[in-house]
Length: 218
Image (cartoon, rainbow, N blue to C red):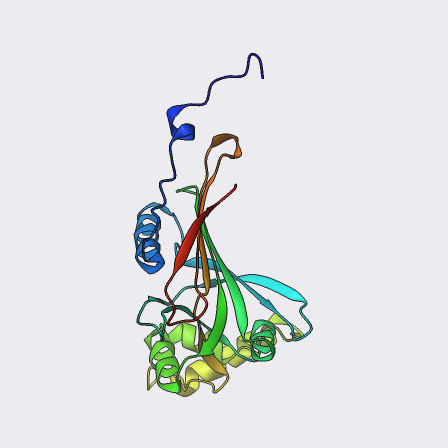
């Protein structure tokens, strides 16, 4: 268009997301950068699930484990109350999508794949690694269910606190567990001016299959 400002060198540059790399290695690099730049919870991620009849739902959770050794094929792990709304959706439809959006870096990562429940031993270990007050708060909650008044929940918290304070830990509720997403698709995105964004998608057909990758139009 006549009179339009020229594109600068950054906009004209080729993709800076390397082809042929291991996406778990690239995730580690970006995650490390986010830990140094995000003011709060760089491990926060949007978790999208769906009911058995495909009605979607999304909320924020925290990443608590990741990498090629999380599960066969590698994965991304989070923990939750399996009797919550998201837990019931996961039980009905064992697949999900994750989204990391780091505004400080102007980057995002989208991850999709099937879910696998962690072992009871791992759920125990993580639950009891949390501060005592967090254990109490989780065990006292009927997450996502109607609450007649906040005082009812606080009374449960006080009762559980008193019952287990001498031990310094609360028995993990059987419904409190974790899930690992084993990705079949990971997309890395970098913001650029004028919507000339940089996107690279990594896909594989199975956990033991090699990754392939391609650039995507913004």
